[in-house]
Image (cartoon, rainbow, N blue to C red; front, side):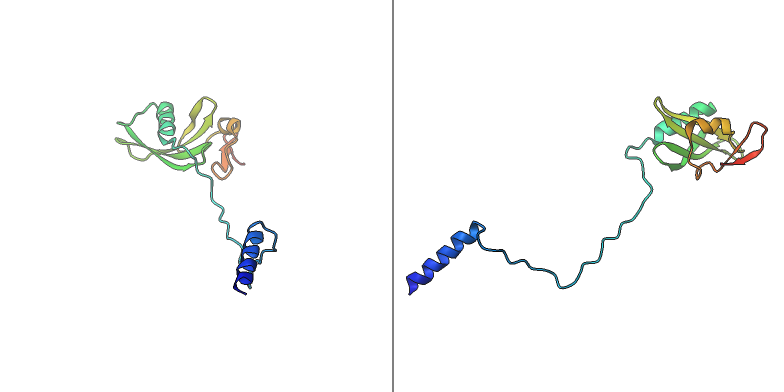
Length: 141
């Protein structure tokens, strides 16, 4: 009798390992809740903050000892922020775009940029909702 039990166990072990018996699957009794997917604004994978700041300094003719550049928003293709001269009251905002040649500051000032300045770069409307037409009138984009 003992040999019969050992023989049956060996038989089952051998064929179970070969996948010849159906596998018993453990199915959950409740349905799992779907995963929550959060949408986030894409952020640049490479920190190009210094390149952007250098483009602003180049446009304004200032440098690190004369002014401070802050970046408010950077999508990786477009950036906006402020520049504050150390020995001046007030400041200005700027717009920059990434081109094949690198970052370029296309506007700095306190008013609206002209449509001619921003149109070639296709700035997102949430970054530049208005611009000035050729007559100096504000245009909603």
